[in-house]
Length: 250
Image 1: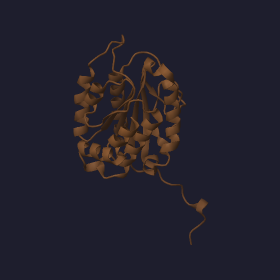
Image 2: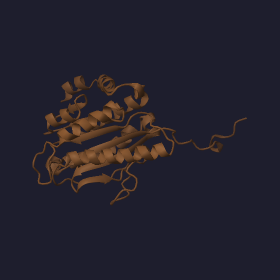
Image 3: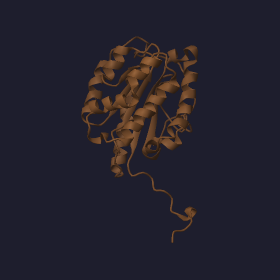
Image 4: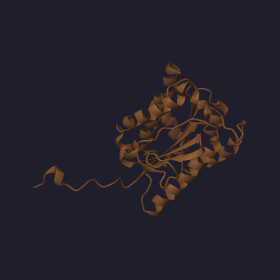
């Protein structure tokens, strides 16, 4: 006869992982019209929202990289460490980000490169521990501007980064989404993510993050492991009815 529920052994941690990386613009433009306050509120609201996605909560790990204030920073997603972060990826259940501040220029290229670096390290750690990925990692760029150099001048160095992202996609190592709001440079977004760039206009950050969670759940719960990136992007787009939805809310 089975014992009482509280006598059962604790649930084992998931034997596979889904890695999610948010690469977020915190440059000075985000201080305009309370955008950074809106983003902070949205991130905490998203924490509650994504708890409904069981696949993601069970297997997900998340990292948060910002570019702008403080140049490029790897933020502790738990909101506990203020300096160098020992482990950039934490379980989704621990996601409780600190308050982000806006300022500085827009080192978008360096931010994405940093995100790729910490992702590569985490994948190697999991591989060494014998823990497989449930699917390829997802990376979401969220920006309201265009990449600049250290002096705040517009730069086209993103053109060198685009082939790196394509190679990652072709090798089934990454899914990359570029989500632009307000004055985001659409040429840059389309260059970085030809099949997964979205012009979200004046959309609130809370709704932007709803799109992140919906696409994440679609990939986590689906059979995308053996599909090419183009097919996955198309399915995600259809699943969210993204373009029709944006047509009514853009």
